[in-house]
Length: 199
Ligand code: 5GP
Image (cartoon, rainbow, N blue to C red; front, side, top):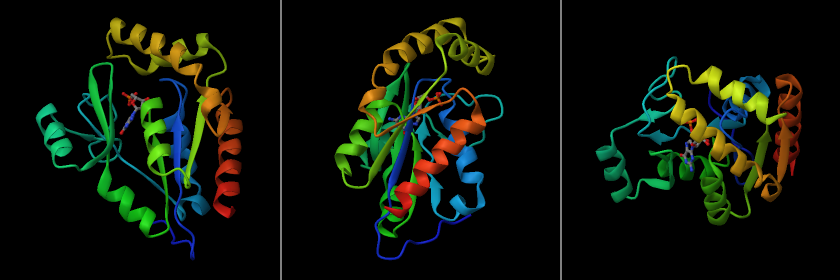
């Protein structure tokens, strides 16, 4: 569904960040499932060299590309910001972001800390950063293990180690959302979105 244009107001970038397993992608997906919000917010799809996980779809969850294609896009300046996360490349396609913002529409992105910092630097006036916190490290571990059934043990422990490091950055974000109960977290996220939409 297309987002509605906001009259005479620039669009905002809503960055949802947080450790792997915090539930940030689920929260953004669920936020956009709200009919009222779907008219205002568009989800950005990143380009990645990470292999597709079970259930993920090309162009829906990510644009899955080869390393060569990723390098070609970078060289052609078609990537706004990018990161290397556990050996894989992830990048935000530039074209859709610029087009939507110009049209006064909001954009939702799930990014790592580096991506959140860079976009806030590029668009300081209209970037809203939200950090999703898991209720505990034990819950986070269980979520990562459950989700990455086909992911090897080494990657699971790497994701956990990185998650612990990432948690200390929560204070640098505009908002923190605790995701212990998905419905409660979703309600908090909706409140933030609607407040920022009317600001
Ligand atoms: P995952 O492999 O779990 O889908 O993503 C790994 C990490 O990369 C997550 O923290 C996710 O938010 C982040 N990520 C996904 N796409 C992008 C992107 O385009 N740019 C940046 N900087 N991080 C991204």
